[in-house]
Length: 141
Image (cartoon, rainbow, N blue to C red; front, side, top):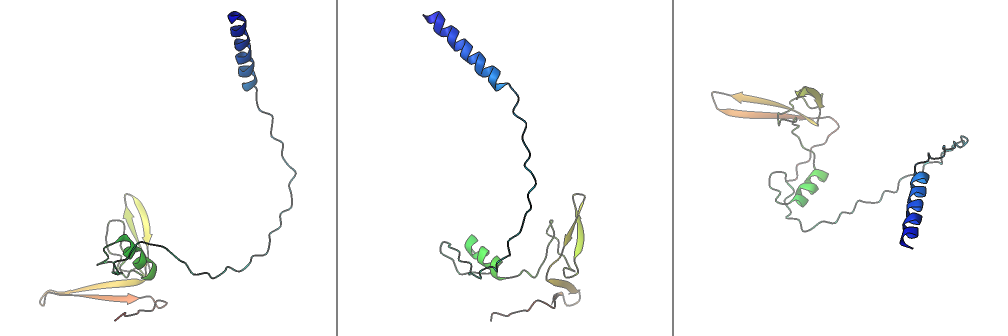
């Protein structure tokens, strides 16, 4: 009886192996259909609502103490200083500059050009920032 059961199991396993090794049927290609595009509907102007934990209410990149405050700062403010991958300042960000990093050229642009003047006799550094014409400066004071 055991020999018969083993023989039947061997036959079933061999049959399933042979069936599994057969090539799949060739896929049939459907006839090309004519596509039509539906008219685009205007996008609903729903405000963005974001849920966060408590803010520390320091929405400054210099004083933010939580990641939530930094996220709010990034969504509501524009950085005046543009830097490259090494942290170097992009002085002509309005026109854009190309800097090389690891053998690859990268193009950097931003909203402001920065000019740094250093007076050695008075030991004073002056930073002149010119923003793009399409950007409006707002002093929150």
